[in-house]
Amino acid sequence: MTPVLPFSAALFGFFRRFGSRSTGLAGVMALCVLFGLAGCGPKNITSSGEPFVVQGSGSGASIPSSGQKTGTVYLPADDGRPLSAAEKEAFLSVGELDRNLSQEDLGDVLLHFKYLVHEDRYTVEKNIERAQLYMPFIHETLRAKGLPRELAYIAFIESGYNPHATSRSGAAGMWQFISTTGKYYGMRQDWWMDERRDPYQSTRAAADYLDKLYKLFNDWNLAITAYNAGEGKIQRATAAAGTSDFFELRRRNTRIYSERDRLTDENKQYLPKFLAVCKIMRNLDKLGFSRMDLSRAPQLAEVRAKPGTDLKLFSSSLGLSWETFAAHNPAYQRYVSHPTRSTTIYVPRAEATRAQALLIKLPAVQPGTAYAGWKEYKVKRGDTMVAISRKTGVPVADLRRINQISEPLRAGATLKIPGTNRTGVDTRVALASAEKRSPSPKVPVAARPQNVAAPRPARTEAAASPLSHEVCKGDTMYSLARRYGVTQEAILAANGMKTPDLRLGQNLRIPAAGKAVAVAERPSVPAGRPAAVTSRGASRPETARASSDRVVQYTVQSGDTLWAIARKFNVSPVELLALNNMSRESSLRPGDTVKVAVN
Image (cartoon, rainbow, N blue to C red; front, side, top):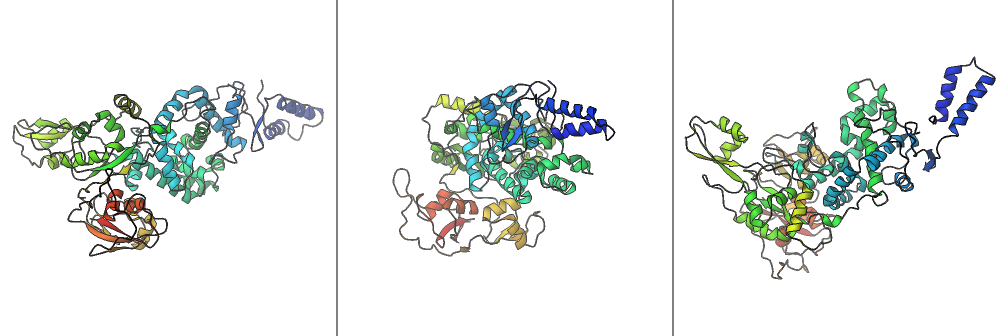
């Protein structure tokens, strides 16, 4: 069948061919033919009152689009298959982020929708299976920041909810942060671990980044596109094109003088694909996909591991296979934790107390002693640190730090070599195998990893007052803002800084979100608050603190919770409860004072 042309396009073609010289019967006949063809097309269904054709008929299907070439890696071709009644209903459904779209705007969305529903159902099912492990935490994180719930589906496009995903450009993790952006949002990356692969830390960072992008553009279409293309590029492109509307920006793309500032094919299709995924994910039952079983989200707790912890020995002592441990902790790239700083480990919540006790008791690794996560290397005649580094893959600086040895090396000496974690563990397989080995009843979801009570390992960072901070290794403006509960902009303004660049040893003034005043002696506890108790019902003694800790008194602000205060000061919530003789049910009122042990 001849394709149906929009009336404006048909009229344009007519006048272009016949011009003002053509009049009379020839012109009338041409117009009649055009109107006749328009009446032969398939029936339209409507979205927001606008006609839109969703019934394909081979290559002649009338699908308004951006004009971008189809059948590419970025924009699939129309498969020619008509949508069923259920598929039409799902496609025309409207959520938080796909409102008020014209039929032209929806053209590319339809092509992505049809491809995923008809041709690539396997990918959708696979992503659903992984998504159910993290979706409760993602939704909770977005809700806490007041962001649209459907932003959770950005991770569908970025990685298919795979924490081990890595792009050709080096972006990593479930939310695909590049190295610089990851560091800006406090995710450390080194030979030992890559915190961009931590699904919980990266989710919080993604929420913060999306919130920043929306405040920058005041438009979700542009903010989502900027997540893919970069905020700088979208700022330059909208300025050059003279529009703040994404779909109008696509139409004006070729008018942008600088090719560097134009949207690529990938940039142009990122939002349409995302909107198609939103329509699918909100209609899984209707489209015949598996429903997400959110009760499968692992119930995890955070514990702290001291520097140089043998992770493989720890996991086996806890009764976890390495595959299960690695599935819960994809950020670790070695069988051993970082040798100079404490790190966070996620363990099953039911094992949290035992896990923290194990981490404290694990023996220090001695030269010449091989543990589960370590290997031995016998120094041969002529060996150098550089040569051993090439053989083992361990950086020279780390070899020297771990073994506390310098050159020349003595033949026959034994060096400790940290084993390399088998990255790329499929979380679904690891957790499924764990369920088969130790079945347990399903518990209502509370997917946020929680801290557990334990003496806090001494931190390597320099001591800092709540109102001033000396910059130390690993600090970023973002991590300091999160630590003290203020915005990055507030810290910049308080210090007269124009950029968030920091230098070691720099002293920063920290504007107070709520007053935190050092106290010389323990203040009295507000009356009426019960003492914290252990699971056995006995009163819990106050958690022991390192000698370098000091107690500060924090004045509760409106909206504060114990958990929020704990995050401001980077301490364990349970330790905070114990220090104040409070229980989880205790409530806070603005003006109350809370003791916090900082080091």
